[in-house]
Image (cartoon, rainbow, N blue to C red; front, side):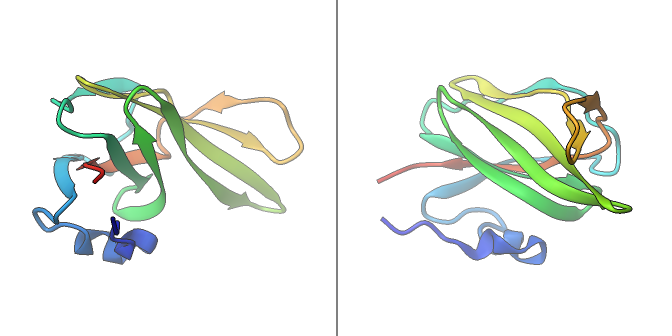
Amino acid sequence: MTIPVSMQFGSRINNISNGQSRNWVLLWKNPAPADSFAGQTIQLDLQTFDAVFVAGGSDKNFWGSVIVPKGYTGAIRFPLQSGSNVRWRTRDVTCTDTGVIFGDATYNTQGSSTTTTQNTGAIPLFIYGIKFG
């Protein structure tokens, strides 16, 4: 099976599906991508899908993505330069039969073990359902 890999860059993510491709189906698009996004569950019927692809970023800028099989947790994670330090933005993503559970977004600065909640980053932009095989 071949999975389309045209999602490598933000402007190309729509090449996967301006509707649908063979194994990928657009299930949800964030209606307010410029707004803060607190941890929450997006209710979706995922019984016929094997995994989800979640693209994240801020506003309409694509920064990171993750493929999460049902029953597992992954994370949208990407670096953000802040002066001479790199901050890692992270948001947990869990896939179930009934939806996608998003944790709060956090960041920590390079070399620090302190984690801070900041829901203005790692915002989910799209959710695609994926069927394997």
